[in-house]
Amino acid sequence: MSLPPLVTPAAALPETERGRTDRQRRLPEIGDLGQRRLAAARVVVLGAGGLGAPALTYLAAAGVGTIGIVDDDVVELSNLHRQPVHGTADLGRPKVDSAAEALAALAPDAVVRRHPVRLAPDNAAEILAGYDLVVDGTDTFETRYLVDDVCAELGLPLVWATVLRFDAQLSVFWATPPVGEGVRLRTLFPTPPAQGEVPSCAEAGVLGALCGQVGAMMAQEAVKLITGIGEPLLGRVLVIDALRARQREIPLRADAPAASDASRATDASDATDASDWSDASDWPDASAAADPRATPDRPGSDRMRRPLRHFGSAAPSQLAQPRRTGATATHEPGTEQDADEPGDLAGHADTDDHTTAPRHFGSPAPSQLAQPRRTGATATHEPGTEQDADEPGANADPAAAISWIDVVTLRERLRRRQAGTDRFTLVDVREPDEYGAGAIPGSVLLPLGEVLRDPAGVRAELAAAGAADADTDADAAIVVHCQTDRRSERAALALARIGEPVTVVRGGYLAWSDLEPVAADPAGISEAEPS
Image (cartoon, rainbow, N blue to C red; front, side, top):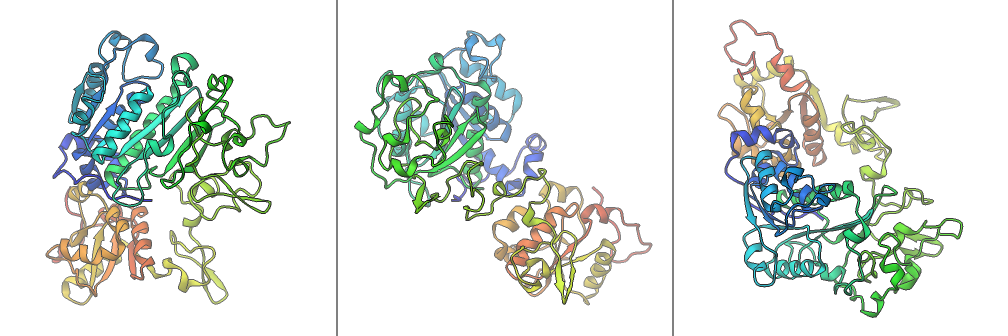
């Protein structure tokens, strides 16, 4: 489930911050607008330890404008294998100081607020009220439940995680989200475990690299919430088993009955082994949760299928469990089967990238690969266009509405448009800094992220942003270009899917820049504008 952006954007980015975040702003989902939202955001990280240290690092790196650090501890030697924001030179120093200095070196434009105190009932509301979002990296149940209660009272989103040994859990809690139902830590675990029931990292140990992974994922969830992109982990719990490199996702429902104190009981041997989760048969609806593949000769085969619980304690009943229909195990929407289960891919209703064939990052997913268009009995295709495999014929193919022209043809069409014999809107889907460095005369800037967010609203956006020499009338054809081809193809497909005929300029601005100047060109469109 997607959520609206958490904050309004800053008016502008400092020039140094624009350069530092350049590669992130290239992501169309973030772009300049999303980066300005990050610059306006205020995020507080509770604890500068195993989870807080990597979360702080990546929040600052991402461009979050104001970062608060709450920690009353000092740096110890045993911290350093999992808290790389601190170094050996920081031993004995307050963690808020060493962390703040590291963030300042990484992101000089960020404002870092230091709170060298222990979060408590008498100061929690006052501290957290000064922020838009809370990242909880604390290591005591008392503090975690306090944070959950205060965030619910203040209406703040809470990014939560816990790590022990080789296992981790990660989620987003929000008692009053703008859309959908609210869930909290108390929805997942209504009450804290009994004193001494769950071992600490000092007792059970923890993998430092897993802390880094999960802390970075916490920062990732914060970025998604701030910018309003993707699907945050609200109403879902991500469970990570680092030893087997497995992850699964469990839906969290606010309307499920709370786990009783009796159902949370566990024996002493289980309490001392955080990685040996209690058997599914111990809990309500256990028949639906048991792994059908578990056999005596496959010890531990059901480990990632057991209900979620406090590490070393019991599982709550709020978590959606796999459902059975006859002899076939099915899953609640959003849950995940282990990769080696029979019928794994066939049982999924969706076709997200993670369920398709492996591919190089950056190359098209199988559904994005160019497919042939049929003309009679002959299969043809436009380079870079798309046709879904199960769509019959060219009429059902959005790519069939896309045509291509080269920059020489574009130059001629621009000349004709100036003479009043051709009508089209030339849309540049690059980012503002690229456009400012050099643009095709007569083009209108509309970054790809804006096109993808609301393809149906593109006409209105073009009319509002139209340049004096651009034809942005509602009946003018749309021609799109980017730096090369990749972004313009994505924009064209989004427009074609809503029935908008569109043309792509092959080679984009780079090809335009390579055009040979035409002598005595009165239209002034033979060359790219100087950068």
